Length: 327
Image 1 (tube, rainbow, N blue to C red):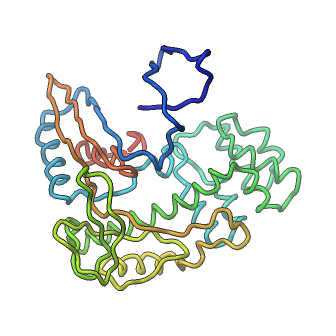
Image 2: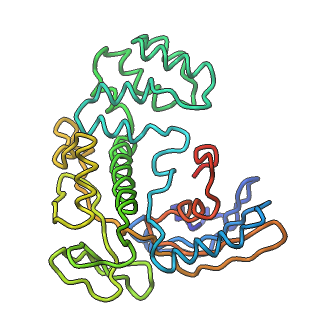
């Protein structure tokens, strides 16, 4: 993992060692890293005390990836493994219902929470915001920010929402976008749609020689070239129904939720409006390899920016309890 902190050269540490990590200075760059500058991420992940069939599972998952048949789902961490209601909050916000969104954030029960936190949520659900503020622990920092505003100004649910950091406010809407995408991709798979290759009528892209970046989105009216990958739209206010095989799944999901694309332009909180975009249907991993050592297996691979290692790991491990596993 590369980091780019800013500091004067006279104060630069050559090495930082802590119990949980080590950081070593390797050089200087002209500007800090940003997500836009990242082409991909390389992983070396060791699975310990693996089951006897781990070799077959790895090879099956890698084969799906090489054939471009492994679905490019958003991983569970996109929604928050500790707080898996972010997409529900986002759904309410897209509909402009800030009260429902804040009530969901404050009051929706989470599995495995301490009794004191469950009691705080019950207080918030009953409108006992001052009591809830005292009861929420420091780990519920977002809840405390929102409920403090409701104590100061009762009924100001938009203000309670805006008491949260901007990145978090946007995160809720993006989580709902991602949830819609995963459902659309699931519908496509259940409908036996081939996600490995673009066909006429698809929006599509072509991978660059590095296998990570793309040469731009091509329109549904353009005939796909050999090796083109199909794209599924991320719903936003600029969404356009091109009539593709994936667009039909998108429209079905939106109808099920009672949501329209234009609602992603949130009039009363324009800062969280989401334009939308495109995402590749298959996961496009490269450099796939593994090593076995007794009951341990080390997987090595590189994924494009925005793809999730946990999506590949989930195909290998197939956890029965994703939330407790973390993916």
